[in-house]
Image 1 (spheres, rainbow, N blue to C red):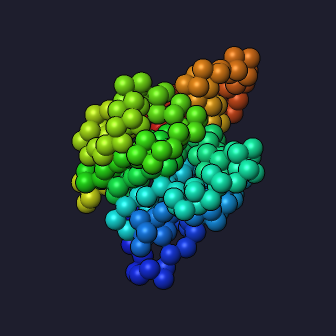
Image 2: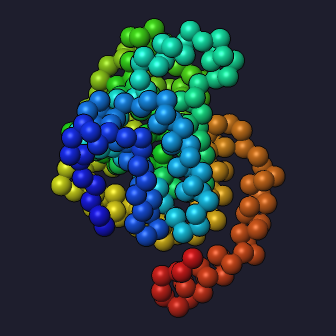
Length: 265
């Protein structure tokens, strides 16, 4: 597995980068000088990358990470102020919210590799991933209350459904920073590792996900997300279940189990 290296200098800053390694695609936020603060052009780039990844059947798992010492400082506050004054923004909705919701709905399993601190809107970007593996020195905080911002509703829903009401209130209403151990305790982190073991931890999970049946995983992820939102399409979920019972994946899975070998999906 190719390791992710910090950018050499501030001139390396760019919109998010896509890196391929077999069945794994890695999206890397790449503005290290500003702690990978997201700009409007980065949002467009992320949407394009999501589309490209979903269109490539060879990709089975996606990792989202950052360059340098932080995962991301969130969305640029100057851009938020400009959008807040825009009548178009009030009717069109948040471009950042669109990106985070698109990431949550990505058909492939997603892992956030939290190489460092995660702040503001980036906490929701990471939370939209299916799994979050963080270095043991990472930290997070959600400063919306300190900024006078009522956060968008889908982000609050994500916090509540994944972390619970009490933890969502603590993070949103106090705007206090928490460390990696607390992030793990409340369920924000799926796993925590020292810096030297972070890549190995991500590799293990990515390999396990890439080896599983992609159609079954896609359908179950959708059903789980719909349950979490309180909006399950029962007929569609039932159809996905019935279809899986007659699909090629279950034939290979059962055959591999009988032959005591890994399945080849």
